[in-house]
Image 1 (cartoon, rainbow, N blue to C red):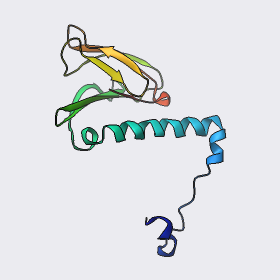
Image 2 (cartoon, rainbow, N blue to C red):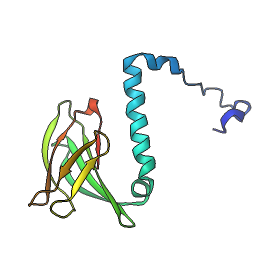
Image 3 (cartoon, rainbow, N blue to C red):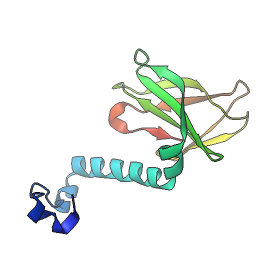
Image 4 (cartoon, rainbow, N blue to C red):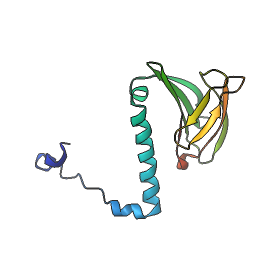
Length: 132
């Protein structure tokens, strides 16, 4: 797409966002979810785009995935729940005991315990993700 000049190039299928739809709670929920995710991505763009990805937990059978990304001394953990119900999980993380991880999506804090693990409540897929 070429923005406002794209119509003459065949981009006529592009439409303007009808922001009045945000008055509907369901549309507002989706909008706010993606707005939050995009802001987290923006604030951590190099870690997400260039960081080395290491799986640290989960599987298809467990219905969740946890991975860390590290780039240039910055790191983060992403935990995704693909189940319809909240899950309580213990995840081995690559941080020192006592490190406080901040859940940037839900504004919660988790502390790495003496076993190098964080115990987290992962919201159901319909409720969003957790990004530390």
